[in-house]
Length: 265
Length: 265
Image 1 (tube, rainbow over the protein chains, first blue to last red):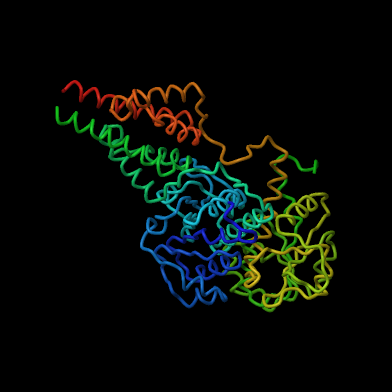
Image 2: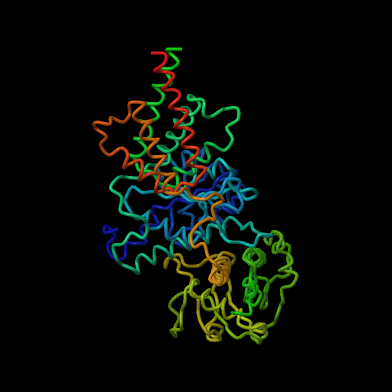
């Protein structure tokens, strides 16, 4: 954190990307842009929005049109996440496989310092569809899930309101870091090696899945919850680039054994 | 706080009134009702709204129509506040006369416990007009001013978004009070499976090492830092018992492939 000169802490918010997946109502995209700009965030990425650009988005942005103008529209989630080291998905309670769930305040404490850790760091926060949120596959791409603690019987927040709460906590965390004005990364040890990004992790998981099929441990016709369990385990550890390379090397060595066994058979 | 029986802390939110002064757009009133209901608040008071009831309010309330139905419409601020012991006004920075200014998190810490102090206690949070907030006279009726820390050059939040942030912090404070009174899992998710113990992890690492030697990935005469790196990665994730069993199962499947390759050689 030493690279942050006094007063520059809020720049960590430039490293946090808000990703909206398949948004239906363009007005909500405008509300999101306004909430982001109010809180000092600027990186908006839209995965297959239904209608964008749209006058309803511009109207609800209420002056945050620069955020809309710079928003990237991408065809799939992978394109939104490929350069991100930490991915957090917003989620309701009670998913099938429990994933580490944090509240928005904890998200701020984790994400803001990490976002400020290096110039190349990118943190992504995912928000799902208005009517049914993120899919299980999308949630399984995330290191953490963040849950806004709402009333169980009326739990679904408006999309703009949810982004407002998350961006508020991220800004509060950046302001906290500024106030502390000390060189202490709140989260974890200063790491000597860059964290793996989303694309590297996805390639690792694809390789792992192929190898597990190759050794007859994973039945493609009945995969059960094996891959989600392994994703959850590894994502929790936030692997760095060297660790991912070591794991890929192990998988390649296993693949060779399998090929050897088949050749000899 | 002792009067709150187990699980009843959230009832303190019933004692907090959201007061909207001279709201122009009925859609914003609906968004406020939804945000309140999401966070467990129910007492809405409208001081001379321009249009209410209105279909735009009902539409944006998105199911929180019970809050709208019970909302009181009053002709002046005094009528909204007469039974309240604590009054807090939302405000931008830099008013003429300095007033005690708190942030939303501090508001939660002050207002939620006070709201729960007695059955008759009422706390009011005031929100002003969309275009120019509360007047100085209205702000001077308040014990505290609360400021949502927004960007100076783009400081005005949407009314629904502002109410969402405040109600979120009030709910977080009520949940904190509840947690403080219980044996509290501080961080993250209550896990459904017991964490692996030291002995299980050591057996996993021994097995891993044997298998890595078996696939010629680890050279026992020149092990370098491979095992420490893998230990560090897995220990960071705090694996549970099922996860350790899955990993042991994978290693056993690899061992069989190696045996097959050797038999056929």
